[in-house]
Image (cartoon, rainbow, N blue to C red):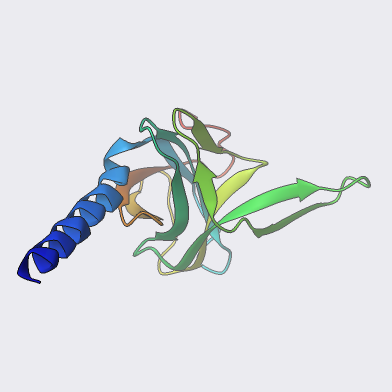
Length: 151
């Protein structure tokens, strides 16, 4: 009975370390934002998320002290050329692949801003994964019309 208890604890610890190790294989690059129009409109952030691991990871959420709510949205354009945005939900990143958040596609919506985002500002954004890990990245604010991380 005692051996079974130790085996169960060892298995639980092994599973826990595996789950949290997933974020060690996730690299976020070129995180940037546009300056916001005050705090009445949402802010936005873009980045490249690379899974360098051997197992899939699933992005399930975002948090930042700059916004009351943050989530990944998808921009879609219909046949009439009308664009709309909707929550993208959980996003699985396969091993060895990249998920790009960029203007006109997937992007981080920063809703209910706590302060305006001004060009040159820097703020933290935390990505949360289903496997239990988190990655916090510093986001650099570019101009209001920026199209990329170096504008």
